[in-house]
Length: 514
Image (cartoon, rainbow, N blue to C red; front, side):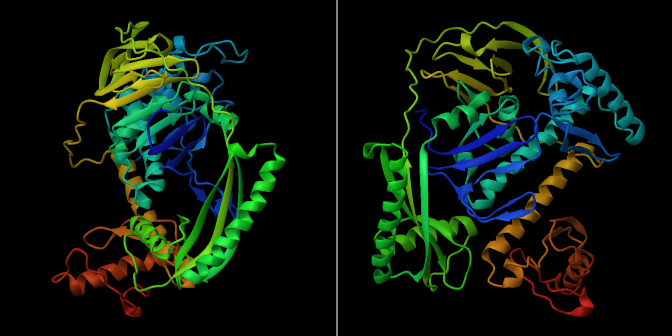
């Protein structure tokens, strides 16, 4: 209805952030690690990080850190009047992005008090003084809060990279769909961090998960192992298998009371290269060549290469019967652009300084009306912070679409002094790169040692061969990897070029395979 075909879902609540990818079809994971338990069952492909409004802000003497610990709902953030620690929510309160006057009065021991700005301000002043005493850094309390918020934004942007960039999707071609109680407060900055220029906010964005559950289609998924080399003969058998799976799914859907007119079936195949274990789900086509082309396009996007000399194996056949529920009506209103009148103007820290920023009610914006940032848009289930350089437009369906209308300036002067905020940002960036290396290695490996036992490590080293960041892989490798890298630099530095690959198995040069 909104007209967007490629969506990155961004759901930020109190304790965590969930992100997802949609480009015409729902993505599922068939093997998931939950609380240390490996589950082999189809479920929605959702990546979760411990970054929510309740994520605790910590200074460890050198770096700022956000989460993974959470203040939860009790005691909750410092602003909740229950003696809680400073959190992401408090950073937003400190910077004026969340105003106590425009927030429900449900806090304190009796559950009837507003957010406590003064406690938040005192705690940030103490923290800024502590940071100055330990490091000599002269950041103001507002700059400290801004630094923590920047790290939280970076953590959430990295989560989106996990389900997009890491898998070959160009997020700059997507729209960021923000929901959850805290999603709108951070969505513009997350979009900026990812190079995205379009954001979508549903009228029920703050409670969209609950709203979506009520409108979700019924789905029955039936699958069967095939394990046959892809050929014309195998396709005939696969078609018969899919028909049988569809019949079973239709029977189950009929038992739910849905008439045939509201049911449809989608067919898919899990294909992989012969001799490998990583399969990709491809829409079924009764043509070997079409299936191969679709698989190789997906493989190229995900892993960056194809192996045309390899035969394809149809691992699993899938039939999904979809029972369409009633579609919620979204009335289309006539466009009636008008000048937006703010409820008030309040001091908000934006663009590195205090600015008098207008606050608007979403219900007061007529279809076609635009609002330029910096601004704050209030509604019953959330708050949307419109950053400088962004514009909000109310559509005829009461959707709020945010668009970057000014080019983002990314050039910054960098000094030689250690910056506790940038230390954490680069730590997260390097860790993310090392983890992506490991994911690519695991998914494309032939060896059982690599794919199943995970007997490998990935790390990033500086030009001298000293460790910058390592992913949480095999700990035994960490002490020797740097020595192995340095031994290669000593012998190959004169001829080393970008793109070169080195293999090493000499026990006297680090004692590890490389």
